[in-house]
Amino acid sequence: MTNAVSLFEAPVREAAPSAGESVGQPVSALEPVPVNDQPTYVQKGFEPGTPLEYVDREVEGGSTRVRTEELGLVRVTVGPPTSYEGDGYEGYMVKGSELAALPAGSFLDKKTGEFFWQPGPGFVGSYDFVFIRTGDGAKTRIPLSVNIGPRKHDNELLLPSRVIK
Image (cartoon, rainbow, N blue to C red; front, side, top):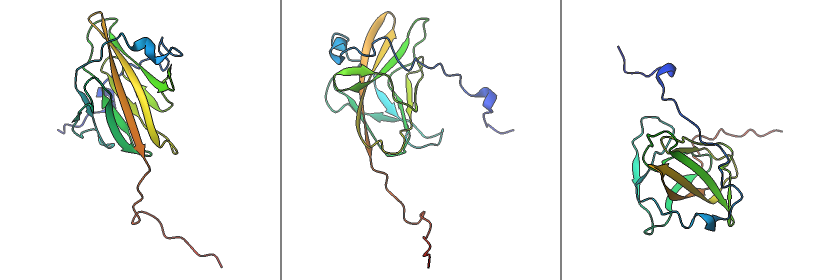
């Protein structure tokens, strides 16, 4: 017998709404919400068994910074899972000074705090997010920056071009 997990045994995920209650509000509206001091973890690559890596905050109380390359997968656990009814996560992309819905191609599990995003072609640059965790009746915020660099091409994977005469 193997230890393989069938599709029927995969974990059930509960999506957070793509647009939380605070969409359109200024980012400054979240300043009174304390910053969560729980660790953030990132999983790199597409393999499900890849171990989680701890990510340090660059400044105390500041954003956690995650780096990937264009067309890469962003898989971040922004905080600990929630366990009580009514507790959970909501997430926002920061656009200028406003809170916006999470980007296309992203998914936030509202119970586990896992954020997945596979940015499409052309998503190069820095993207700021803020996640709100409600647990035991208290709210905390988790700032996250995702830096996406240009995709590095492996010349061995490129197909040779043909010359048309």
